Image (tube, rainbow, N blue to C red; front, side):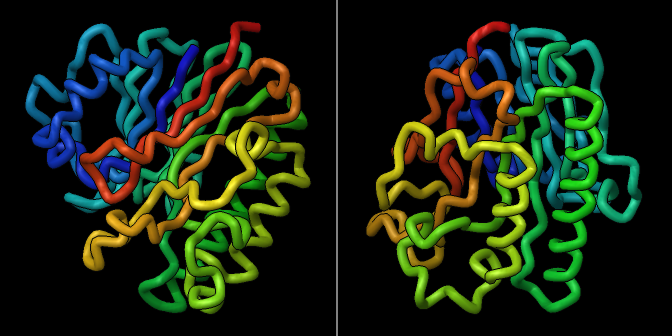
Length: 255
């Protein structure tokens, strides 16, 4: 099974840049999209339903903002929208599918750059999500998490770490949360296969940073330890255009 995760920065905008063609040509089993910025009813039929995938959505209450979607060939056993806390769920940031042998979390995590209140919201979201994950692990669940975490973990994960040491997205407390996630029993799947520098998933469009590869790796696949031996590949599709982020991929074998 191959899974693609991509912050599309507006699914309607991405569709105009060839999203459906990418999906069809790539032919992955599952696509997890973040920052869709639309309600399902706002989507043209050609985007809302793309054969042979089944589509599930968690839009934000606020129009044109945030939101997540999953397109999957294999129908899940169940779908969970949000985490059960209105403060976090009203922004459409977590969508979960249960495939029986693992839970797939598609997440668009908050950005903390706007003001102190949003940074605190981001940190609170992180903590609530980790508590939720720990509860699922305690129940014996295997878990895949994908999406835009809005934080680069290590200095190797962004082009200019020193310049951004006091910028949200690379603050010590944000990076420490990823340490907590790993300590809870999750693995950063990309780093299992590639520990080299200059592997980024987001670039600032205003400064044309992508042309110079001055980027950040803030999009991830994390897997619970019990899935480690089933993961055979993880990659970054840095050449794929259509958003300020690029797609990332994960291949997992059947149980």
